[in-house]
Structures are given as structure tokens and as C-alpha cells.
Image 1 (cartoon, one colour):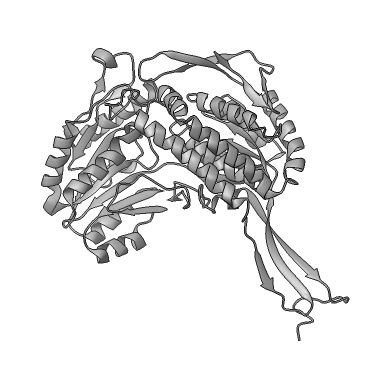
Image 2 (spheres, rainbow, N blue to C red):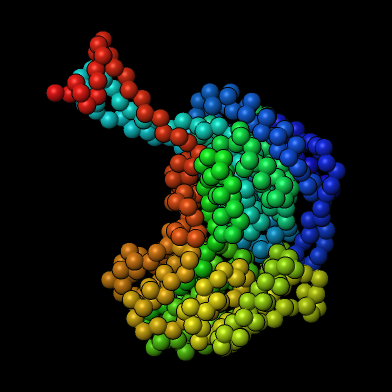
Length: 492
């Protein structure tokens, strides 16, 4: 099967004829081929989106929301199918695949509800016989660039608020995971979304992504990916005076205090560190543990890691699936070697797995380092794989300082039974998300998602905050006095 672009309500092969294989990371099987589009394809999609946006913006917001309700119901009906497709092309275990699809369903229904809100403000005027209010206005055509690790959830975080607010969009999914975009485009088509409202253009970031950012009619770019690429997106978008929303990397930590429930902490650490094979921007990469419980926590982690089954995520018994490709394996293993050179003690893992049923996939053994220095590379740089670094501290203040020492600021967590420590931590941890007595992953769609420092540029996905990316504030004054009233001058 060859996947072609979805533009203006139809499947289009476009000008180029180059395709690339989409590979199942669990076994190396070719699933399909996807088109590698170019600038001309982007131009065509933007032209369709720009034309459609004028009419789409005039559709009452509750009516726009009705499409999202229908999309949500179709996703719910096809949840298992979508989860199976997701697991095959991305590798995460099927349980996580179902959870990610559910996240998209939740976002559809949540953002559909915003169709009857989209709240602005009415405020009293400082002058007589004058009315003042603010409203949200759509921006126009928006460009969405999404990653391979959450190929449907992140796309819904961006596309659904964009649509309900009255915008049209061009979506460039990751080349590694285009099948979920294909499935979503089929749903957009089936619910009768007007042609040009939703457009999917496959291809590389260098070609399609750059063309979207540089196109004068694309007013907003919403990007999720690496911090390095995000900086380039921000730089190029800034030169073209676009609104750019960035959600980038993380170096997330779980803090385990001396009074913590260690069984619960271990469970939270393993889920956060090894779910999606550590390929989450919210993955736990550091465990900052009080020195008095460090050895006990190590032993409990090692014992529980023995029970982690590794393999093809379609198998319901598997707990850790493959990483996305050979380049990811090389990067992860390179960091493990760096950790050894830096003097960290390797307690478990540290190997590429190539035996038996794993030989044709991309598998890395869940890895645990201890005695890691807080300023070492493996404690500071994003690895994006199943690797944990244990860092010992002697107090909450030291734990918070170590947590905040990295250039990222997405997610953090603390395990403690002391409510005073919990509240101090949630105040002082410099991250966009803080968990108490849970791991670093598991954000819910009705709260803002994003981070500080090298993780983002101040915008947020999810929740009502997502609407801020895709709307402009318009202030409206209605003077019914019948005379000219000059604000700040005629108030006395």
C-alpha cells in the first residue's frame, strides 16, 4: 500500500513519485510506503486550506464542534483497530496504544465542548453608554508538525482546538508513523468535514516542514519534537513573524524522599521510565533519591526489572516494546557508554537485544545506573530510551536543586508522605507539570501540557490553554452615546 496526501478532501499523489518504506520496529516488516512530498504539495494544501478557512470561520462554533463529536465517536468505534495500527508502526505495547487512542477520543469530546464556550470577557466601560468586550477570533491557516512517539494523541491536541476555533490546518506527521495520520484523514473524510479544513501532507521536516514554516499564508506553526529542531523552527518562524508554539524535550526526574512508599515509588518509576521504551518527552530519566533509602530502592528496582517482558508490543504479555529504529538504538547505547566512562555504576541492562524473536527488531534492554553525578552528561542530556540514572541527595532542598539543574523543564515527581514537603516541591520544582506520589507521565487532556526552559516557549497543548495558540484576542467597543467619547480624556 502507498500512502498519498489528503488535500482538499481527496487523496492526491501530487507531483513527486518518491516514496519511502514504513517499517514495524518490532520485526523489521515493511508495513507500507509513504509519499515524500515537496514544496509544490505544501503550496497546494495551503491554497485549499486558505480557501476553506473563509467559509469554515463562518460556521457557528457549536456546529464546528458537531464534527468533533462525530470524529470522537468514530475513533471510539475503531479504538482497537487504531491501537493495533499504532503499535505496529510505532512499537509501543498494545495497552499503551489503546490508551493513546483514548486520549485522542477524550480530546475530541473535550474540544467539542469548547464549541459552546470559547469564552471571552465583557467588562464595564469607563465611559457612559459604551459597551466593552473581548472575543476569540480564528487566525487562519495553521501548520502542525507532530512526532512519531505519540502519532495520534499529539495530533489531536493540536488539530482539534485549531478546528473548533475556526482555523484550517496542514498536518505533517512524522515520516516514521504516517499510518495513524492516514487513518485520521479517513475519519475526517467520513464525517464530511468540508474539503480543505483538514489536510495531511507526508514528507520530511526538511522539505515539508520548512515549506510550511516559510509559506506566507500559514500563520501559526505548532511543533512537537526535539529541542534542537524546535530552535530551528522558532528561528525560521520568527523571521517570517509567525506565531510558533513549541513542545520539546525533557529530562524528567522522580524524587524519592526517605518517608516515601517505596513500593509505590518503584511502580511509578518503572512505568515512567520504561513505558514506550522510554521514548516519551515525559519519561523518567533521573531518580533523585534520599541517601537513606537509596540502597533499598535500588534493590527493589532491580527485582522488579527482572519481570519486565520485552518484545513485540502486539503481544498482550509484553511490557517493553522496541525503540523506533536503528539510529535510536545507536544513540541510546552511545549514552550508556558515556555513563560508564563518567564513572556511573551500571546495575542492569546496557545492551542491544538481538537474540531469538528480537533479532529483526530494535530492542534495548531496560537499563539502571547508580552513583550518577548530578552534572554528568547522562544526568543532563535527553537520552530518549529506557535508561534510568539514580542520584543520591540528603535533603528536599538538594533534591529540588538537582531537579532544576537541567536545561529542560517538562515534568517532575515527588514521592513523600509529608504534605509540607509535597507542597514545597510543587511550588519550587521548575517544570510545567508536577506529580505527587505518581510518576512523571500521565497528563490529562483538560489541563495545559508543556514546560519551561528548553522544553518550550511559553505555549501549551491541551486544556483551554491550547486555544490561545490558535486564536487571536479581539477587543470590541460599542459606543451608543451618539457622540464622540475619547477614552482617558473624557472620563472626568
